[in-house]
Image 1 (cartoon, rainbow, N blue to C red):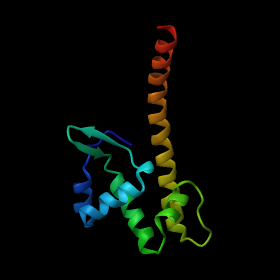
Image 2: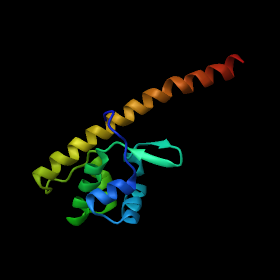
Image 3: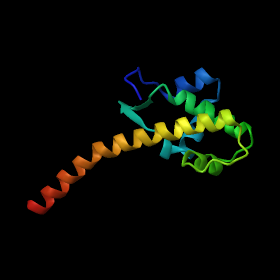
Image 4: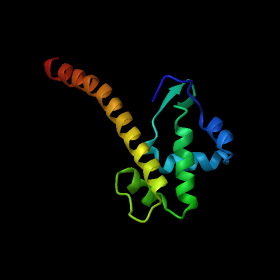
Length: 121
């Protein structure tokens, strides 16, 4: 996800016309798929996450539960889902995987350094 200006959940809620508390609840339910950065007291997110939450609310409007949405984002997409939604879910599944691998790569070196210090120190 690019180097655009990061946005808060409140800004996303206003943009997609969803209650702020509803968006917070949704983010908590699917927190393993949402990566942000802390700027002072605020968490900020890539603006692309606005599209992610639009997808989540579209899936909820179609009757999917949070557990079913979580399964879809993990790659278990049901056959009866609309083709456009399949494409949208697949795009986000790949974006989330890439973001996770990027973050995992950043922490791997840090953790190795801590382990080495503990063993050698």
